[in-house]
Length: 121
Length: 121
DNA sequence: TGAATATATGAACAAATGCTCATATATTCG
DNA sequence: CGAATATATGAGCATTTGTTCATATATTCA
Image (tube, rainbow over all chains, first blue to last red; front, side, top):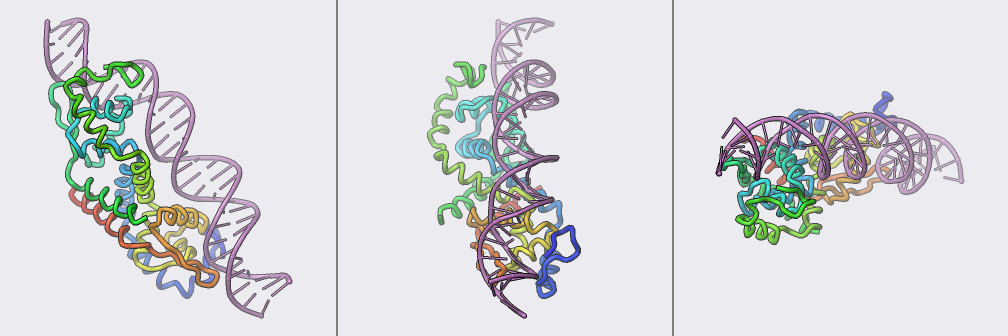
């Protein structure tokens, strides 16, 4: 077997040719896969996970989230921007504070599925 | 307002004190959050997402996955190890090839939820 | 047993990521 | 308006991450 760089790939490729081309054809378009991966990246960080859990309990301002997680206002603000770009949270201004909350219940559902997986050892 | 480093946090903290401490108390333990984030990290990469989609169609050997994704055997093998550590896939040996397949239907469910979120613009 | 082949793995390196620090923006209130 | 305050953001830096390259391990077959 020779790598991507050579011509030959896998000696059993002839046998598996149908399978390989079927899989290749049924693969979703690159941008859809990219969007999916980008969305999951949001959940793939402990700080962001904490923020989501916090907002799961209550609508909160940046300052309170930072206090609850014992982290910098700046760090939280940066992460909130990422989460908001993924449309997982929304915000509304109230005076000089900005209140963040979950955009919909997809967050809870997605995390719930993941927890279910983890619970099954 | 002064950062984590100072004593004071947020001037409205007194008002929001109950909320902040409630959120802090209801936060899941650190290791649970870590496990969740680690699991989601698996989904947070285009290559791994492609691998999961491939296995969604069919049980496949490393070689064929590499061919289908037009990537190096080594790169695929490294990623398979990560995905397997997360118990999202399982493997069985068949002669000198090793066949990978999805461990259960959580993968499909989790990706499905994420796709649903993305479809709602 | 030894050659061939499928997969795994360690080191190295470039790219992405998360936090900090300093500072900018926006809003309130005297 | 100007001071105070809540949030946002850009640059810098250390850590993490994904791929490559070389090589090791494991299995088959002559």
